[in-house]
Amino acid sequence: MANAQESANAEEKSSAGDKYETGRAMMQIERDKGAQQLNEAQKLKQLLDQINNTEVRQSVVSLGSLVITSSAPHFYVAISAGRILIDQVEYIALAPQSPIGKSLLNLKVGDTFDYNKNTCTIVKIL
Image 1 (cartoon, one colour):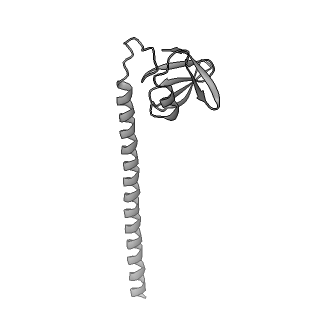
Image 2 (image 1 turned 180 degrees about the vertical axis):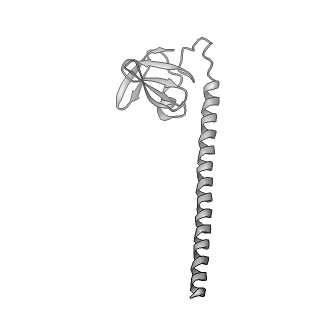
Image 3 (image 1 turned 120 degrees about the vertical axis):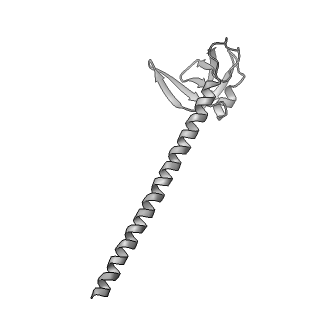
């Protein structure tokens, strides 16, 4: 009987040890995820820091351009942040490397481009 109890106690310790190791591994995974998210956020901040809002805008779409179109949505070429609603006007913040970002780069006022099976005209570049 004592041997059986001793074996059961040993199993609990082993099981608890496994739980401890599993818990540590899970915490390490979460820490790694957090570190990766922080790294991505720092990269996005560096990209935003490259945008010089004090210089006069070019006549073509480039990094940092706010593209006003003939119909909603309008586009902000900087980082991929998705849809933004400001004063009931829809904007899409997108990266210049995205498919729509690539199609917008170097366009000028009056040029057209396709978005969601619609043709949009660039009215203003800020």
